[in-house]
Length: 350
Image (cartoon, rainbow, N blue to C red):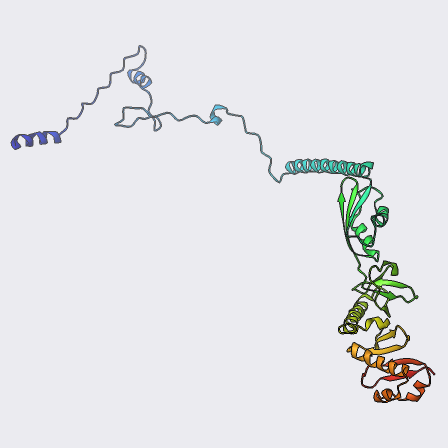
């Protein structure tokens, strides 16, 4: 078996080569030379069309380019991005777009003003909230002059500023209720006392020291002691605010224990140099009590007045009041200085 397979392998190692095919002899063409006829019959082989030596298929011919198919025609010249023609076209196109946009906006604005001023948006009323001292008619009377061309054209900020300029209104918010109404929310000033103006008239005053209205706006319980000496003008707000804070602290101090003493005071006068001066309700005597310890100082002054009214010379001596005899003789008292409650100074009306 092994002896037979060895010669077979040796025979397989020597493959038979195919015999080269004989090219057919070219036929002779009558009247031409044999070599020339053979050259014409046989195609000329070049590097592009010559088939591989060991290949039976011919190479695929390459497609011709468009240039070779249409010789003489050139592609149109493309404009450069920064060429004069290109820039001119861009400018013309942009200018036309801007002009059309401006015309459209102008038409819209004209239509808006024409439509906004129509009767459809005319003011027919206001909705007011937050008012207690002012009526709806009062607020509407203040607002109407600022809405001559309808609700849509109304200047909301100007309306708000005009409302705040009214002394009774502390804050205001204004909004549109299209097509023909306004919504107004106001915060009124709340009077905490009555104050005397420099011309002698009486007005209300709030916790910021702003005077507004008149005494008719004070509603409810009996008014507290009148305030005098508040400053008037644009720069008076901070000073008056301090005065009102002192005033409220004074009333709280006078009424913190029994009996309450605020009812014995008719007027509270503020002075930058001397502090607080009280005008008593019954005797109209002025009592200087300074800027603190209000109840103790007023009590000391009231004790002196009680001793004088009762003709009690011993008590006046205990209170260390000089000129007790003159006081008991009926001389009128001009003022009492109780800034030192242990030694009250009595000023006589000469």
